[in-house]
Length: 344
Picture 1 (cartoon, rainbow, N blue to C red):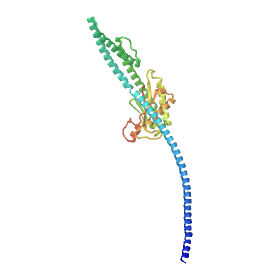
Picture 2: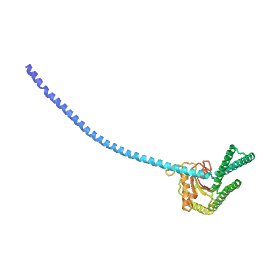
Picture 3: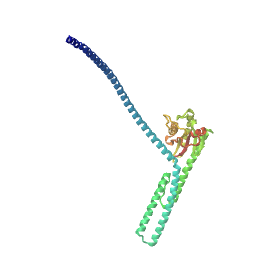
Picture 4: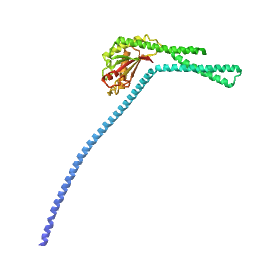
């Protein structure tokens, strides 16, 4: 009886055990299915993200290439602008120092005269001393040769100065005084002639433009306020500005026929701004604005028949004000175009 009960109890264990295993297997299969579905969606998402990242990398590479190209172009343009500005500055400095060069030439001439006179006196004394002794030592001969070479070198220098001024130097020591007088006369005549035509040029400008409050003469410069020619922050000549420049071009064309051909003259157009800074794509600074305005006037004059070799455009920005103040009147006075007749 007890054996039969025990046998029946052991037989009843297996169905529960099998059900548990079946349930566990179903759970495991379900989890594997969920895992595979998750893997599928995750793989799809990663693939899409990877394509997006690759596309972004490609676009980034293109943008980097474009940026490098633009940087290179910008650097080239800046170098070209710096070169053009340096050339304009050099030309301006050369024109501004012409009078100083003439004075230096005159000082050099006087020094050369003094040296020649001293060497000539020394040579004459040496000659007389040698004649009285009737015998020339090797040292005396070397000294005479040295003095002769120095005199020849000084005469060559004077000849070069005379050639620059168009004065011929004749042979012979007795011609030095006359030659130096001719150099003085040539320098004085050049300065006086240029001053005469500068005065005549300004006089004609006054007659044509009249007594305008925005037009004045300061020293050797004729000054026009920028508002007569250009709009604010612009380098384009307006209709009124073109009329003013047309009158100026007619005067220059008439003057060019009267000035002698041996005077190397030039009309210099100087652009100036006030000290308020400008920063636009067209004009990053006042340097560009002032230079562009001067160049616009020069280019328009060329269209009116003025010879290009007689014109020069220079930009000074805000660095040479007539009035250092900060009032609107000071700013208006400093925004100007200066016209100067000078030697090249």
